Amino acid sequence: MSKRKNDRREAINDDDDDDWVEIDYPETDELEADEAPAPRQPAPLIRYADDEIVVVEKPASIPIYPGAHGELSLPGLIDLPAEMALVGIAEDEASGLVIFASPAGRQALQAQIADGRMTQRYQAIVRVAMPQRTGTIDQPLLVPRQPWGHVRVDLDRGIPALTDWRLIEAYAGHALLECIPRTVHRNQIRSHLQAAGMPLAVDPTYGGGTELRLSAFKSGYRPSRRHAEKPLIARLTLHAESVELIHPADGRTLSLRAEPPRDFRAAVHQLAKYGRLTGGAESS
Image (cartoon, rainbow, N blue to C red; front, side, top):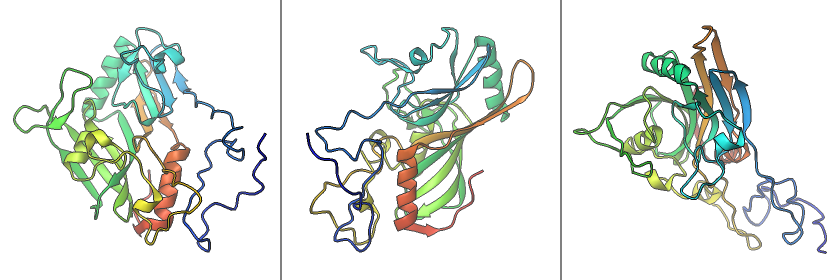
């Protein structure tokens, strides 16, 4: 059996001869590759549940609904009752909070979205040179019936769509935004950000890349002679951070928040360390 590595001095070190970054995701990454077990699959966490509403904190690796081959999806993993349906915006490859509701609850929450009483907040790492501080993307979207169809801005045939955003932090060629969808359409945030010239950093379908690497923004980056560069994040750079709504049954305010997972935090940390341009507003 291969020996365990003796030390972990390969992390970022400005005095070293390269800029290789050891991304400490699996707890087993001290093992050599041939003896390390497969990383544990993160599991969804039910944050709130009753007869009307279920709120789940979803890892990015778990799809919301089964694919063509019947892959295990979020409702199956949490034994969601069949009558519960999705409310609000959710993306298969995004992390964070997903809301389901009963038929009556869904109708009530859709009314709250329409009049602004239900609010979903997303964090988004985007590609942009010099972002403004705040903005509203008011662009009609053409949303195909097919779930795989590409959503795009269409001024003539699109349906009204509105997304507010504000700058949290600006970096070299990138930014961290808070996005609040005011309407609910499939892929709304992704297509709106692309149309506004600041696509998600990782989103090949809507103008982003396939992964975000340190070499993309660190000035004077030096590749390692010993290690291939690992991506900081290689999935949709979108996280459903919080939701606030009025419970349709008893009228109390329900407010939930989910911290970004490790890959998202790692990307933001490295952007802040090597690419920060200006301070932004604190996340609310």
